[in-house]
Structure formats: C-alpha cells, structure tokens
Length: 282
Image (cartoon, rainbow, N blue to C red; front, side, top):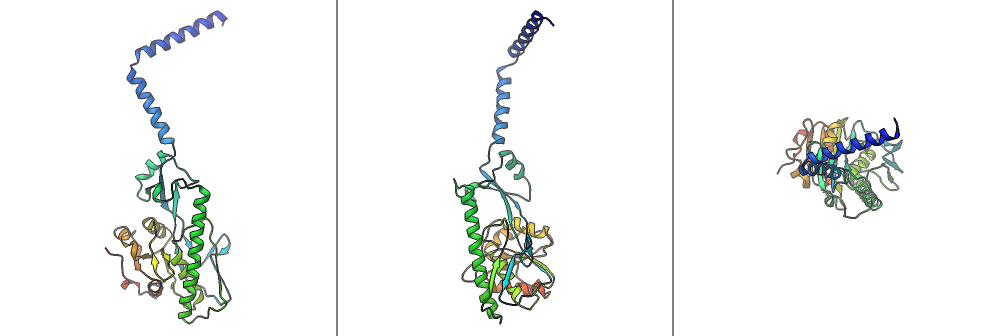
C-alpha cells in the first residue's frame, strides 16, 4: 500500500469513528463511564473484614514437628482422643487487604461473616502492629493457661513442683485458645484418659480467676470444629447468645463458665456421660 492510500484509509477510519460518536447519545457514554467507575470501585480495598472457619489444632499433638504443649519436669500421659483448639481465618486485616468485589461475593456465603474493619482492629493499625498485638495476646493466654493448669493439676494430686510448660503453635494469635491449652496441660499431667477417645473442641479465654471468658467468631469456630471431626464443643457461657440456633448438626455444645466446669465436662464426655451436660440457652 502506497503512502497516499494509507493516509486515505486513516482518514476514512477517523470519519467513521466520528460518525459513530455523533450517532451515540450522551447517555451511552455516561453509562460506559459508570460501568468503568463501578469496576474501579469493586477493585478497591474493602473497609470490611471477611472471616471464615480457620484450621483446628489438636493441643495434645504436634505442629510443624514440635509438641504444641511440651512438658518437662514431670511424667506425661497420652490421651486416646483429641482436644481441638479452633480458629478463624480473617482477610481484610492489616497486611491482608481484600477488594470490594470479594467482600460482596463472600457476604452471601453461609460460612462467612463480614464485619466493619473498626470492629476487628484499630483504624490506622499497621500489619506489624496488628501481628504484634495478636502475638502478645497469645503469649499472655499461654501464660495464664499454664498457671491455671498447674494449680488445678495440683488439686488433682499431681506433683507440679519443678514442672516447666512450653507451648508452640505457628501462625495463630489471640487469646481464645486459653481454655483448651489449660485442659491440654492438665490432661497430659494426669494418668486419667479424659478424652475417652473422643474428639472434643472448644474455645474461650482463660482468666486469672479461673473463669472462661468470651471470644469472637464462635459460630465459624463451631463450623470448623465439625468439619475437622469434633462431636463435642465446649462453649463459654458468655457466648451462648451466639451459639443457640447455630450449632452444626452432629456437634453437641456444652456451656461452661469456669475451668472446673470445663474439666468436669471433659471427663464426663470421655466417660460417655455427656448427655446430661448443659446446653447453651437464652
């Protein structure tokens, strides 16, 4: 094609484009702009946090090749069952942004909770600050669990003088596993097979006065427990309003307020006498 013909072809294309532009209404271009704008908004970071059922861990077992609860200075005993700590996966927290379109899609899933970000973390918090706070809460939870577990084991007749407890878990923060850590330490120190071969999950903080405290995301945690084979779930009494009507089929909830209630419930379940234990009610 000669240079002249190329110029003529380009001119013809521009004339057709101008004619197309003239024929289309202003509304057409306004609509196209709105579609483009909506697409950009959907791709922007969401101001919400998406929570889904997270992994569970058997506190009587191992994580990354290490004992989750390692005890020295005393004889330990194996259990025939499992004690599962439960977690929630969170997207949209500092360091893990999600786009608005993901929030919109996940909002309609029954295994998902969508929360305003300010309900989960402090506005402006960096990923380093968020991780530091979560790790600090986990460390504090483990210390409280150790203290309460050793005191309770002593009441059960276990010699705890010189006992050292070390807890190891990867990529999990927060205080909500306190009760299960405590029950795990007690179970390892006593000769009794508390679990009786059953898979028992639970959640709740372990307070310095022996109380079991409320936690977040309990509905999702029950789903994770059921998914991973638990048939029993120890729930803080202070979370019962969130439990009632949301217990997955095949999972039996048990209301507990203190470490003493939680341990006695664990023993009753292991002995096959759990049916008389209290449900959550409102």
